[in-house]
Image (cartoon, rainbow, N blue to C red; front, side):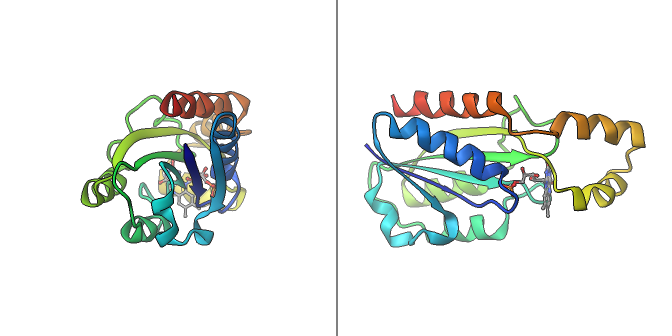
Length: 171
Ligand SMILES: Cc1cc2nc3c(=O)[nH]c(=O)nc-3n(C[C@H](O)[C@H](O)[C@H](O)COP(=O)(O)O)c2cc1C
């Protein structure tokens, strides 16, 4: 199978998961890793399955990811899976249904088979800590707990889980 792993990443967390997924995909497929900004929408039709990765920004997919979904030129029988990183500890294990809505809508519109989403925590850039703590109205203790949980993420375990997700989809 021809696999494209593409991602938008500002601080490296989503890129880390993208690399792990691509490493897994490479074991038995022809897999390519590309930054989202390097993807030509008209080339996408040549892949059997596309993995698209994004951070959450303000509980949403950032504009470049939404724009890319809008211009994807799919071919029949193509599949797409997503992966998302976020600092909030509440999301793991929960369905990413709300956040993946634009991905699912794009798949439906273009006749692409949506294969699900992997998500994990990714550390929030230090420069944003004070603003986010204030915005969420969290005490130092509550914020400290969140910082503890997100520090070092995605970690090896997250990468392993992302690889297991990819392996299952790739068969
Ligand atoms: C502008 C901005 C908004 C963010 N909003 C959220 C959010 O709503 N929920 C969340 O869990 N994480 C949020 N985050 C944290 C990122 O999703 C998280 O740190 C992610 O792993 C960053 O991925 P990257 O290193 O690939 O850019 C936000 C980060 C930025 C920069």
